[in-house]
Image (cartoon, rainbow, N blue to C red; front, side, top):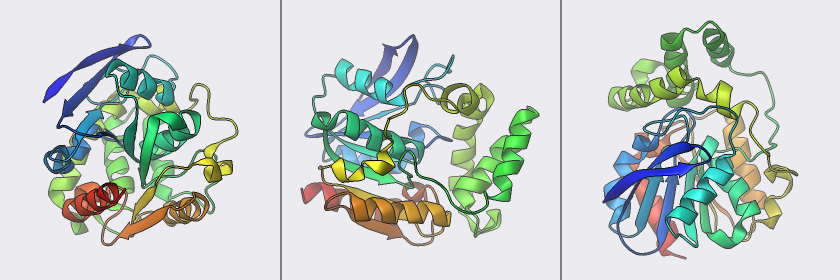
Length: 270
């Protein structure tokens, strides 16, 4: 395995790379870091050259100093590592990222696996979860411990379970990763007003995506995430959809064996 930092747009981005063969890039959700892929790393690197990295403001990467273009960071990382074309797997925030990236740089993308994702421009319907409003309140008050706890309850537990019903190790791992972006105030600084959002947004252009796509969601995630999965599966040409049972926003952490098997079956069938 090789690991290191790439200087991109004034900040250091941490990455790891291992394995041989076609390139598969793993991009993490917006409340954890590349450690969310620990249960995928060994299995996937047996079959592919796998790259995982910490988004700016997460994990071992530098904190964000201002609004960022996640698409440009990914492009610069691929260029630095001399990756001409890759399979892209992204969860949540990074699911949106890889869809936008594919629309902007389709020649660099061989396949897409958006997980627990909504395409950019997707209008969430209904009332926001009460815990989301509590979380924003805690952020505004600078209560990082409460903010982190609420993020884990929102994204790992989901709206249909209590903390005691969820694997304690998964919760602890996610909480440890979450403290870094919370204390870095990454969302407020980097993502609340992203640089150069895709225009028109991806939700209006899904039919333009012409690479093999597997949409994955957790059955216990927010209903709007599941609706977004339906929209993507319906509008991306030839897309497949998989809903994994008994898990919420991070199905790869809760159901790693089922997740790994689905990803490998999809990629090996291309």
